[in-house]
Image 1 (cartoon, rainbow, N blue to C red):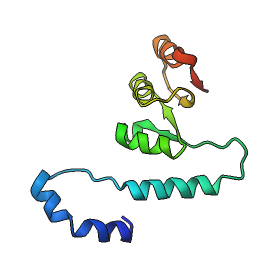
Image 2: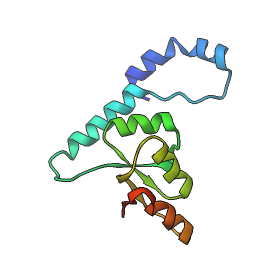
Image 3: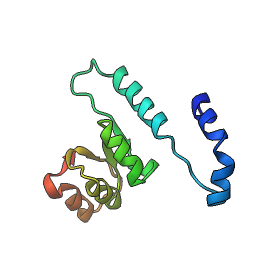
Length: 118
């Protein structure tokens, strides 16, 4: 946890616990965007570079929209991950399908709507 996030969160945490109880997850949009900017800056001199967020790591549409806003594509390894990515408006070169033990129906889903990056 970054120090700036800790400072912002520590004063709010008691109220958050009182309101929502525990356990819960809190995501730092400001921190996510800053990390995305740093990553994009680190690779900005590589022509055609695009980062793909592994949907299986956090299949949360709100977080995925932030990643999309920051220029990231989505690395999907299952049909539900493809559907989730498409529900937030990602298609074709914004989706990379990397699957193991893949069925024909999964390939067909990946190829729908113009497919994705392979």
